[in-house]
Every structure is written in structure tokens, then in C-alpha cells.
Image 1 (cartoon, rainbow, N blue to C red):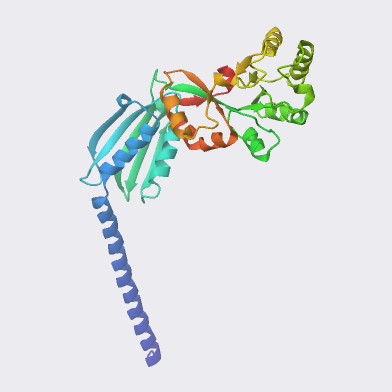
Image 2 (tube, rainbow, N blue to C red):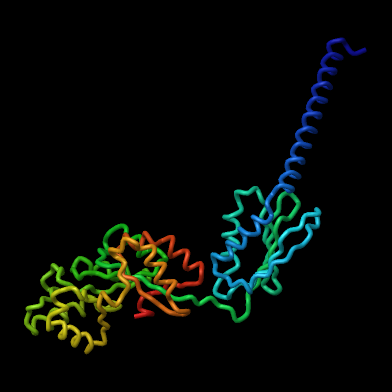
Length: 332
């Protein structure tokens, strides 16, 4: 016969097990109740509107977005079901990335399934086993967003600066406007090897004598300087002259124009570009310029390094809408 101590320990073990089972049952029922409560109280209209807002950020035309209401298979709730025809210049994963970033903090399960046939992708936003939104994406035929093209020329840049080196090595498409100095020559190959462009700035502030172009210099000296510039910066996308400089407003500017033309080198003025360097309302000015572009039009902005970096979020906003940042030489 088991001892009294053994029976006592067995009884305590059974009581403890019962308590644990009761507690687990309470917690499980509570968890199920919370899930059911979440499903009942979640604002499905708000989720649908947030989804539509994401599509609007990509500037997808409304006629390519079809919304219908369907009954959830796992409940009696009615949810939104979308069919989205994606323009050919945009990828479906780009949209899915933004959907994930928008809804990942809402305790929603986000699932996507790419169908091999037809290149369609199904999306489902769920809470528990119940869908709160579903969508199907496929690529539209003969639909491309072509809102416009823009490029950047970064004014008076030292290509050896660490921050500029980071820009040169980045995927950004930029044209570095360099005031000619011998010390910059060693950076030119680095710029081109990273797929970037550079141009030569002509103004009154060139410090190195062999590159100086003065308003009162003789024609012979001007021609000699031009030959040196053309040789040393032979891979420049173009030459750009400050049309507020004394040199530009002198007769020697005609010599520069003539000599560069003979060599098939393009010469532009700083005023040929949209200057945002000292614009205190740079974000508004940038927006206004792009919104005013006709479909397929193009524009080049002249900016400082600081101004360019301040436009980072705006650049991303417009590229999502179908505007394209390109190298300036494609517009020049």
C-alpha cells in the first residue's frame, strides 16, 4: 500500500495539474475572444482607403483599379476585393513593398502569391484566418506612365570631398559641375567609372592661372586656355558658363563659343537650367516645376549639394509617380 507521503504528493500534483489546465483554458478562450473581437472591430473601410492611398502614390489611373465587395469565406463580413492593372514601367513587387511597410504594424497577416501563368499576383490581408482585404495585380497592356524626366547638375563641386564621393558611388544619376583645378583631374576617371558625369564651370572665380579666362585677356591667351581646358577635361559632358560673370559679358565669350563649337563641345549658360541653389522655397519650387511638365517633358535642375540632399524625399515621391531621373546628357 502506498505510503501517506506518496499519496499526499500525488494529490498535490493532480491539484496543480488541474489548476494549470483551468488557467490554460481561460487564456485560450481569452485569446480566441480577442481575435474575434479584433475581427469585429477592425475598420475595413479604413484599410481599403489606405490601400487605395498606396496606389495613388504610384499615380495609377483610377480606371485601372476595380473594387468590388465580397463576403469573407470564413465569416459573414463583407470585404473589399481589388483588381489592379499595373503600368508596364512599374513592378508589382514595388507596390507590395509599400503595402507591407504600411500594414506591418497593424497585426495583420500579409500574404502574396505570384501566379506563374498570366503573371498575376494575389494579395491577402488577414487577421487570424479571416481576410479583411484581397487584391489581384497584373500588368496592363499598352499602359505606361510617362509623366516626365528630370536631371540634376550639382554646382561648383569638389569631387574629392567625402560626401561627394558617397554620391558618386551611389545609384543616383548626377552631373558634377566642376570649377577647373589640377587637383580635380585625378578624380575624373573615378567619376566616369561609377557611371556619373561631370561638366566644366567657367566663371570669374577660377583660381588656377592655366585655366583662367579673363574678360580682358588677349585672344591668343584665351585660345591657349581653351585648348588646355579641352585637353585636361576631354570627357566633360559639356561646358557651362556663369552668365552673371564678367567673362560672359565680354567679347572674349565669343571666342570661347567659337572654339568649343569647332570641337563639337556643347556650351550652356547657368540660366539654361532651373536654378534652385539659393531658393528658400525649394520644395515648393521643385514640386511646381515637375507638376507643370507636360507628359514626356524634361527639365534640368541646377542645385548645390545641400539643396540636392534636401530634395531626397521629393525625388522618391515623384519617381514613384512615374517620373524618371536620368542623366543630364540625355536632355542637354
